[in-house]
Image 1 (cartoon, protein in one colour):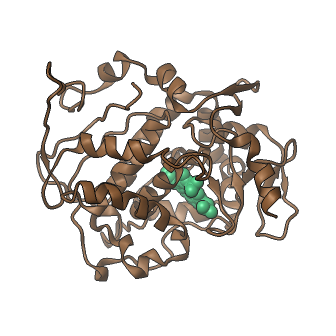
Image 2: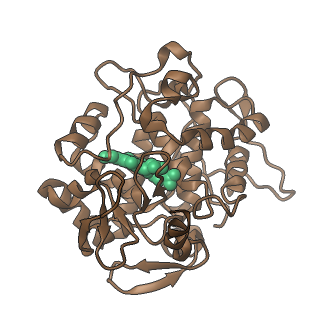
Image 3: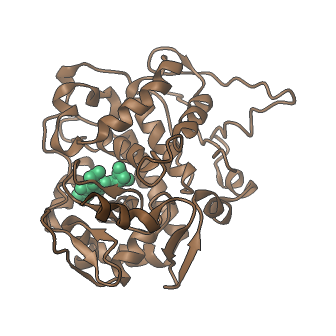
Amino acid sequence: MASALKNLRAPLTRGAFMVMGSQGTNSFRTGGAPRLIRQFGGKGVAMQQSNTALYVGIAAVGAGGAYLLWSQGGGGKVDYQKVYDAIAKILEEDPNYDDGSYGPVFVRLAWHASGTYDKASGTGGSSKGTMRFEPEAKHGANAGLHIAREKLEKVKNQFPGISYGDLWTLAGVVAVQEMGGPIVPWKPGRVDGTHSECPPDGRLPDGANPSPQHPRDVFYRMGFNDQEITALIGAHTLGRCHTDRSGFDGPWTFSPTAFSNSFYVELLTKKWVDRSWSGPKQFADKETGQLMMLPADMVFAKDSEFRQWSELYAKDEKKYFEDFAKAYQKLLELGVAFKEGTTEYRFKPTSA
Ligand code: HEM
């Protein structure tokens, strides 16, 4: 089993990813940076941003390189650009971890910390950083996220003034941007809560559920619509499933550490068949058998409302990046009571 898994991973290591591009051609490319240049290179990024936003880094680096942009966080003064840089630094510090990056598991941590929000009761969400407590940390859907939380503890020790909710959501932003995704505006203001504020179990989606009603039940509860749900699921372009976490196995794309619209391209262009194995029902691509889809992913091809958005994002990556950034920012901010006048940061990717 171990060696079979290793073989499966062999072509997926960082440095040379085989990618099905939107045109359907096979090509090789390296990690996030080249995409970053193509999508959001140089001045293009800064010019797209609104005047009110603070583009930390570019705006603040003075002649001597000395800059300090302080803002009030969840319990002290924190230089968020420095936190951003510290998170970026640890993303790839262990080349043997998965596909060479903690980015995907940071994105999953940010999403699971936020995706418990219930708009009717105003409970859940990232605002209290409650996943550090036993009830929530032990929820089945959060299996494996201790890896991300422990990794980020190092950054928390460096910047004790940041709250856990701010740290985890910021890590989700760093991961998306550093893997070549869009700039995601981010605001601080989450304040650590107590263990009694943990949301109940069962609010996060179940990968085994094949009904299109399931993501609707879960995401409508948070206040999302079908377009936003479809934009968010595209994050499955990143990372992989682990048998010792969810029970599922394998990556969705051949570029699991590069943010792109590949999830939709693979979903709509590959032929998906039942994987014959001893684990839970999942789909494998007929051509190579190396990629996977969850039963819950397949609804984004089967349900006509979801599918029209998947088709749009498969052919228009720029539109996908724009819509993902908006929906992801909304996700990370669910239920957070920001103070009036809170700065909205647009962090500069370290490779830009
Ligand atoms: C219907 C909705 C969703 C379902 C059923 C679902 C299910 C899953 C499952 C079963 C895994 C595998 C976990 C593991 O074994 O390590 C996973 C991983 C992942 N999910 Fe989702 N997910 C959903 C939505 C989302 C959203 C909205 C995001 C982010 C915006 C997201 C981001 C990720 C990432 C990045 C990974 C890879 C983690 C890693 O490589 O460690 N997912 N998801």
